[in-house]
Length: 587
Figure 1 (cartoon, rainbow, N blue to C red):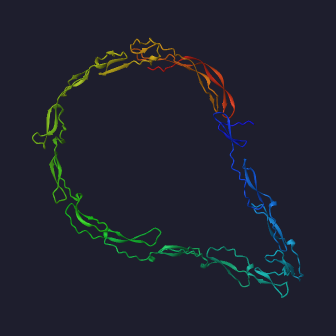
Figure 2 (figure 1 turned 30 degrees about the horizontal axis):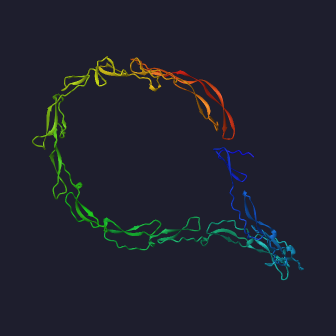
């Protein structure tokens, strides 16, 4: 027998647990472990004996069970009375039957008496006996039929004659034969009948009878009373517990001064819970009279509701009438012992005053630009508490950097620096260029030019961009500078575009080659450069790529995870070449 299984799959074979190994593609099996079979099993019920057999739920293992054999059952039959027979029955889970006496009327002996007209033979059964006792019983159905036409509600009543079975019939009113009332009354109403002379059957009406109403009167908590509410069209009232505070017990609390009795209502309760709560409005009014600026403040002591009062200064209660001070002065508050409110007056500020402005110590003071002097608010040399404005001539220490010269303008105290040349840093030295002049740096890769545009000198820096250069990619002894003296070039080593072989796996959807496949790719350098010719504003570029010039279709064998295998066709590189492409040349 051959077995096909997925890698890692577990299965059962020939009572063995097997698994398909992922690493070796082989199947490893181990014997199933069965539970120990107990051979000494005690069968407690009659008719059962122990048997060891194959487990129906696990055909690889055995089990010991109790099997029924009727031949092992004891035969114990009860003694039955006349009319009874012995019957066996089986109880669920038992092997042997149970015997009992069951009545069979076919086994009874029938002895019928001779009866008179109107009588019939009737079998009467006595409790605990199977066979009946037969006697003559009157059966009015056997009597001659007498037809009487009675009105509604009347019935034919038979008057029995002594020692006779068949009666004498007459019409007698029987209200129970009257049509049942069709009225459906609501709760609390009852159907009342009304009789009319000469008629047997009454007429019916719904009449309220409160005694018929349900009596689930609720039991109410303290303070609540039961109130019945009647609704129009209904006989029975609706009972509810309604709060009546007059029914609440009277509780007298003795509270301290300042406290008052407050009733606190608890949710779900009718009667309030009374507590002593502090109410400051009940406290005696303060008798203290305070001066201006002071206020009466109460101080509270733990355990007391009413405070003790004192006069405490509160400056917010003062009437602040501030004087209007001149420039250079400010309002100052003066506090006097024993008084809460301050006394306000104007005091000189430590500032300089000039025009309509105040100046702090050390601040420059505005002066006429034409005066060519600098003024500062400073301290008086004789009195440090007094500030004066001191002025001195404006110093002119204008120093113009390289490429600039000093120019005097009318209306200004000092001249201004005006640019005349462009400044070029060449190593550790500084060179000046006149407008229209161009000069290279010592590295030959940077050009400085100076121009005059709209009466403003502008300096331009031109840097030559060299193509990528790696000395290890050059043939030895071929490194040299380009004619511009800036960029290095050389003859490159032989690493040109060519066909290169490599190995790798091929895969497609759920299929893959068993081993690596020999593949080919294009790899190597092609001619490419980017250069900025001397004093040119255009970059010259050349770009080329190492691409395939010829391909070939090949086939590879692949194994799939579903057990199948396929021959997969793919495209591989056969020849390579350098293909020139656009470099997106820009101005």
